[in-house]
Length: 341
Image 1 (cartoon, one colour):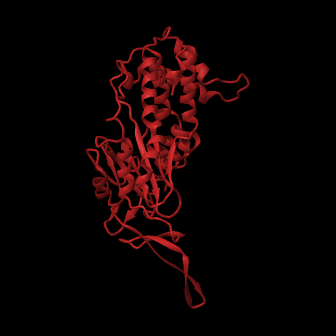
Image 2: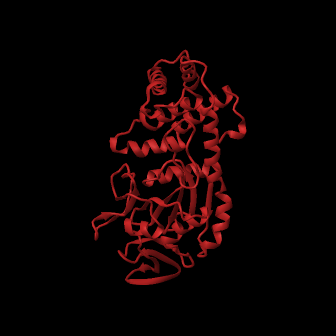
Image 3: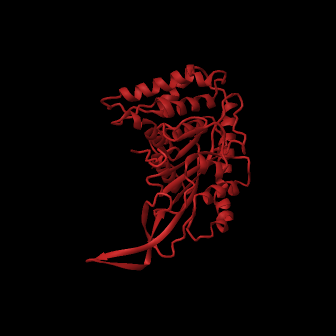
């Protein structure tokens, strides 16, 4: 299952917590308010300790210790994670979430999503950045989201990482997509397990300075687009034609024509754009809403649609469509490149 949320049979619960609304998979606990790291661990049931045990090789009827290796395991369930080097430093689950708050230098932001994956060998936590930055766009009554995501492993499968996200991470597929995007764009702080993770906070702050800067730059660009009126109502048709071209020899243009029509209809009538003036910002939001909610996805199981949609909007064809829409608007209306994300 793409969610891969850890399940604790002793407590008959999935080890995850989400703030405000359930995750797409419906697993885990839902609470009303953002959490401190300690509260998140308690709510998700992830306050377990990870330790290392000697590793043995079975040779015939004998068990021979391998002194250069250890096995990481959960002390509460005694689930074994993986063999690691003897000097592999274990990071307990509280530390990365404390580092999130230290990196952004605030106690105001809170954890809004946290889960253990698999048997608990991999975890993520998501910090809400909305309280740190004004994400309101002039003329748009809605609020935009921004998050900082920590991911860590207890099986040697990866380093402690910090990345940004404009969408709340809720499962393994989403965590994978977020990490892939961060790797591709270079917007990732990677902390090698040395045991002294606090010494890496300053370096992470420098690397992750992009997080708040990116959010601020995006808001600035959206505010600029919100000041640009479109030439006429018919303009949107030409915009969608440039955004979604159809080659003359195309044999089955139905899907592309439908995409154009849906974006134009969202621009004109979307309930999320009520009161938003007819501007370049409104046009971009029509494309964003199409990608995030209406663009057809072809999967074998309808339950997988939310995770698939997240993947395509973060680091797939949906993300590329948004980027292309932004480029077209910036070029057509000669928006200063310093405003672009």
